[in-house]
Image (cartoon, rainbow, N blue to C red):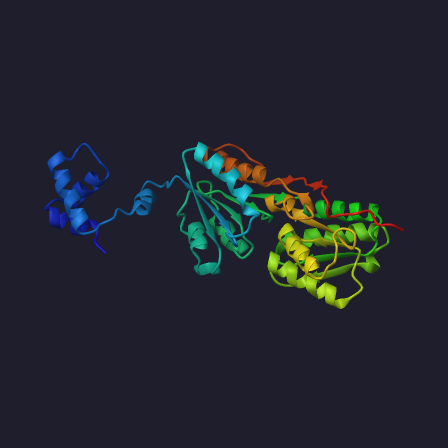
Length: 331
């Protein structure tokens, strides 16, 4: 790969002159600039914009780091981040955290390749986050709480959301309520299960709780675990799913077995992704403010960069969205 030194040698000028020319500086004559540009084209030289920005100590770029870029949950969240970021004249760079310490995502944090980061990923170690955060490099942490200067945590009240959903099912006459989730990774899963269990315990139903968990929080796993539940027999009258993707997978499984929703079994999801209102039956779910959370995360980064005071912790409330997947149980 050609370097700036190669371009300078071919054009017969100094490296500093090449640098001025590539940055369109008026200090370089039109004729010399053309000679340099011709040499750069011949050598297929490309300016390393990232290295240039690092020298200036600012990339005017914010990173959003997630575990999996494919999830529909991220669309509204990223929209909120992007609109604030663009309004400030910054670019938004999204990446996944697959690969842990060797991943590009971790390099963005440890090598300060961006001006700030919003992290929604549980496989990035807490120590990396704490060591990376600086006044000039704020980190906003979603769905996790870390006590550290220049790290701001934003959570959703997951426990209250699941408690509210379970309470609603109990009010509708359901007494046998299962909870289907993925592998217990991070506090988000723990909080949602705790909300479910606390509602059952409140009504003396904790002895009937059925918790099923393994695999990923996606449609395929929701489908597989629902089929497993059906195969076991003695189907509960209602099922809470850890998120909408899993619930949509569950709907598919029930349809294949001819089990009617909500007359045979009622179901509730969590997140209120866009698809939730379009599946049939339309999914009753717990809504978390995704766009608003993303917008707040971006605002906080710029407030910190501008030297403004912020809190170190924020929590959003949730809301139960009633649609067609829950039916009052007949005694």
